[in-house]
Image 1 (tube, each protein chain N blue to C red):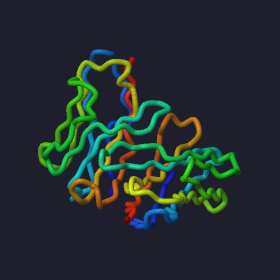
Image 2 (spheres, rainbow over the protein chains, first blue to last red):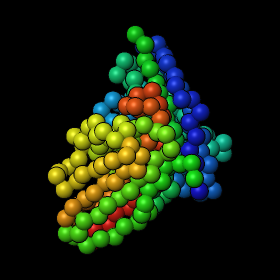
Image 3 (cartoon, each protein chain N blue to C red):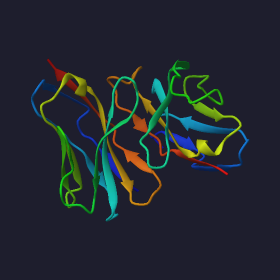
Amino acid sequence: AQTVTQSQPEMSVQEAETVTLSCTYDTSENNYYLFWYKQPPSRQMILVIRQEAYKQQNATENRFSVNFQKAAKSFSLKISDSQLGDTAMYFCAFMKQNNNNDMRFGAGTRLTVKP
Amino acid sequence: GAGVSQSPRYKVTKRGQDVALRCDPISGHVSLYWYRQALGQGPEFLTYFNYEAQQDKSGLPNDRFSAERPEGSISTLTIQRTEQRDSAMYRCASSLEAGGDNSPLHFGNGTRLTVT
């Protein structure tokens, strides 16, 4: 079984500063995908960033980047130049390769960006 | 177990049939959410409840979809007259506090629905 752990229930950051959200996972698989999703008050789940386990290079999407440490099974999300609109719940998720969307989610981290 | 439980794990049905998907949240959790995830897509919000009251059903795609949580615990998502486009993973999540804004979501493992 795969488990995903987010050890920080809540975090806060000042606008324009950088924050890092932690995620660890447990799997015996070698090929898989990792994701960070954002959930604003609308309850939609918005894909922030995606990482393929076979890629050593860390994924980056504008102000969002990850630190993927495969051996340590760690997948942290760094948000640079935080904006008020980044305030949301953030979920880390794991999916085995070719597993038809069977995602496993962490419990989430509530991020508050303060003006 | 202590987690969110969904049943069945897999459901295959013929087009035109009705299906009922069940979610058993973590005991004591106030809020319960339903999401749908199509192949290759992220989770899409459908509806959520605080206790037995349905707070927001704006995400339900059409009137064939309905959900209930009559006693504020177990919830059922019903799809009537299923169509092939309804095929997806249906996920349930619960949170301890109402609204979920200050409380993490705990997801179930989902029900994979296939409409043939």
